[in-house]
Each structure stands twice: as C-alpha cells, then as structure tokens.
Length: 115
Length: 112
Image (cartoon, rainbow over all chains, first blue to last red; front, side):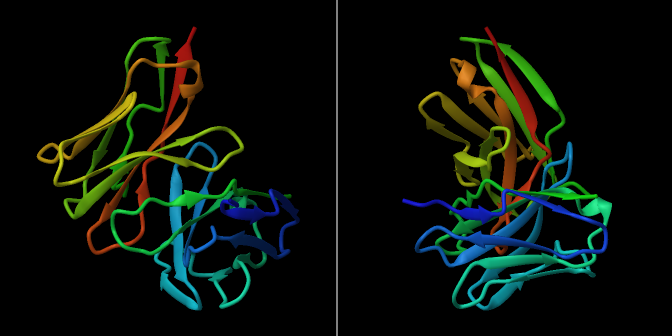
C-alpha cells in the first residue's frame, strides 16, 4: 500500500548545478501535481501532468524549470542552473483522475538546499 | 494575488476546547474546498472537504462550514487533542480547473 514516493528526501546543490526531483504516484494514479513551499509560505502550485502530457504549467517559472511524466517511470521535476532562491520544499501529489471532487495524496517532499 | 487567504499564521487552544481555523477566498469560481493537515518533515494529508452545494460537512471531531456569500469557510475541531498540533492548510478548486490552490496555512498549537 505504497503512497506517493518522492526522492531524494534532501538534495543539496551548488549554484549553477542541476537538480532532479523524482515522484512516483500512488498505484493506479495517473495524475501528478508538483507544489513548492518556500520558508514561511504556503504551497504554491507549479505544474499538473498526466502520463506523457503537461496539462497545466501556469505555476512554473518561465526559465530553468521543466517537468515530465513519461509513460514509464516516475515524474521528474528538473531545475537547471539552480539559484539560492530555489531552496524550498518541493511536494508531489497524485490523484486517480483530475475530476473535481477528488483529493490529492501528497508525498513527503524533497527539501532542496542551494549553497 | 492570493486567492485563498488564511489570515491567522498561528493559533493556540487549550486541550479539550474547540479550535476554529478560518479561511477566506476571492475567486467565485471555486466550488470545492479542502482542508489539509501537515506535520513537520511530512507531506500534507487530507482532512476534510466540502462542495459548494453544501454549507456544512462533518467527520468525527472535524466540521467544515462554508459561507458562500461571504466567501468564507472555517474548520472546527472539537474537542482539540495534542495530536492536532500541526499546520492546517485551506485549499480550493474551481469547477473547470483541476489544480488546487492552497492558503499559507495556520499553525495550531494545542496546549496541555
């Protein structure tokens, strides 16, 4: 009965490096959402994906950030050339479908620290 | 431009008393509302939800009230227990939108 799995739990990168965050949704879930939580802030929506499709990326920064959810394997949130301001907790959530009325199931998050 | 607002960053309540957490929203297209609870170093977990066609939903010690005309909802926890100490996020979704928008959260402290 595995829940949403995120790895790594903690990721340390130096400025200019790339960060890759992975998310495996719950079994049977085909919808994945990424959220970012900055210190003392709420959860900010970043992107919503279904298998092989980006449905809504209205919360993604225009540059350096990308996300994918391939047919096989986990969803990946990729941050290129990280800066200190990217330091945050990144949460992935999944749902069986995107219809209204369904709750999201969250992973434990990846804490990204940029030195 | 915050569409979901939780104006109280923190709240302290005596064990056994009622905890009331408040949330306001600005988008009249929201038609489904949720409350999530979060412990440190863990992801948020779903607590309770309410559709806009209702004004109250109850689940054990937790009750959510929705006032559509005021664009306000509240979460009542009674009686409050030590394990209720956590951050509570109010969230909302529009009827044509699959993403859920979260507030900044309220940190609830249950005092012994």
